[in-house]
Length: 367
Ligand code: FNR
Image 1: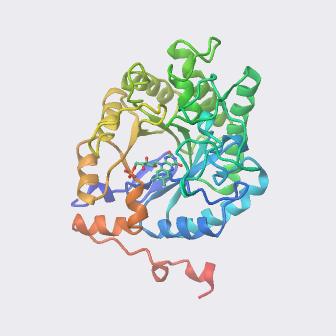
Image 2: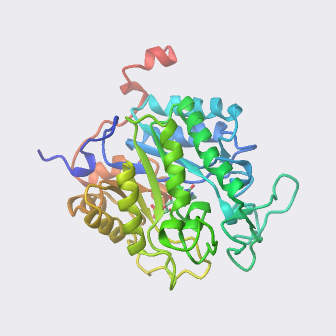
Image 3: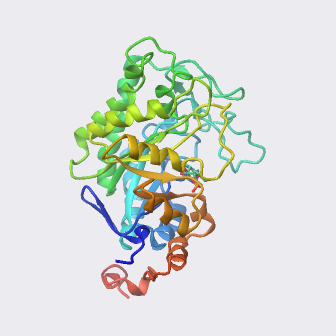
């Protein structure tokens, strides 16, 4: 057929995606006590109407101190389920699947949301309920301005692994179709992976097999409660972009391990674990990371992310077998109906996903 690959359906485990367009996870810093609210309904509701096949909901903390900022969303208690379910139920009216990114900010927590005027990136937030102790594999702070993390004890580590599992149970109740474990951008899991931030000497530090243990323990714990037929994704920073940091070779070795554990999708990002990172000076620098993983880790499905703003580029990435799915973040903020434009660019028509085209509108709205 002449259908562009970008608009060709794909099934991952029991999740039917109507096309290959994914809304990348984006923190909204708009929660109070971790709760979804009106903002999330409008924001995600709009993106669900956009024609994207899948939305990965923002990094959502598994414990309160695992938030990047006090405005992060969270799913560490049962009262947070219903407000999230309300948003997910609405999004699903548009045949849009919903993933939830489970996160712990680690040593990059307790900071200011970016919209606070004069806030220095990574500097500690100040104020009751806004500032909290932060934790990492080791007492290595992220940057000059950052707070010093407490080193997690073995008991602490057990609790956090358990929190990922308990949050997965709540995510099931909220109706999510896919779990994505946030193992990127220098947050807790990523900081365990890299020997620049993890200088532990126990079974969670040192050699590669030990540094990946925190992530593989989390995957194992999540899989005890997450249904086998449902897809599981992991977002990784495939390159740290510093000398002697976590790199693509280690990522390849890690992906082979988690692929064999049953991880269905690897979301290929990079950077964030070092304030001294040296990121390549080209907008599409992350796409080859996804390509490498796909080539080296046979059978592993990947998402490519970073710098995609038009339909032709997205189509090329898929045609060149660099990724199975295309993840788009900032372009969706500028142009929430981007999939419609991408379809135009690729010369096809997709149904504008409008209220009047929904067969089930009567049931839901009574109109
Ligand atoms: C992000 N990004 C991000 N990544 C992630 O894994 N979890 C998150 O919660 C967030 N939050 C977030 C908020 C905002 C406002 C932006 C702009 C970005 C990173 C994002 O998902 C994506 O990987 C990058 O933005 C690169 O993709 P684009 O923007 O070039 O399409």
